[in-house]
Image (cartoon, rainbow, N blue to C red; front, top):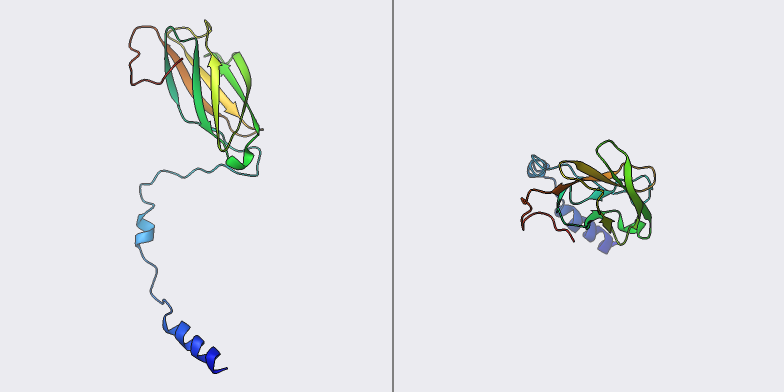
Length: 149
């Protein structure tokens, strides 16, 4: 009993009664919004890392990387490549693997100069992740632009 009382006195002696710090509130000022990927809900958002991809005139294919939730590893994502009017040019499936996916798309002759195309990736009925693809036919394609195969 004496041990219990002495421990109670020791514990209350070091209790923090200070008011909350305003430093914690200043951490969130100006910070970008935080987005999460739901590990249970199959209607979760899928994110494509490259939002605007420019491929060279001679590129026959291109690749995109994206994020899904690691607990959904093995889930099948549907992707589509659409023209500016929304018509589907190509479509397929890619697997979510340990929180990410890698998508290879054959461009062939379907992507023309002076047009922007959209690649969309979706898991279930959730919001799509999308990226804009365009072909550089004027030689402006530089070493710092996104890579193509």
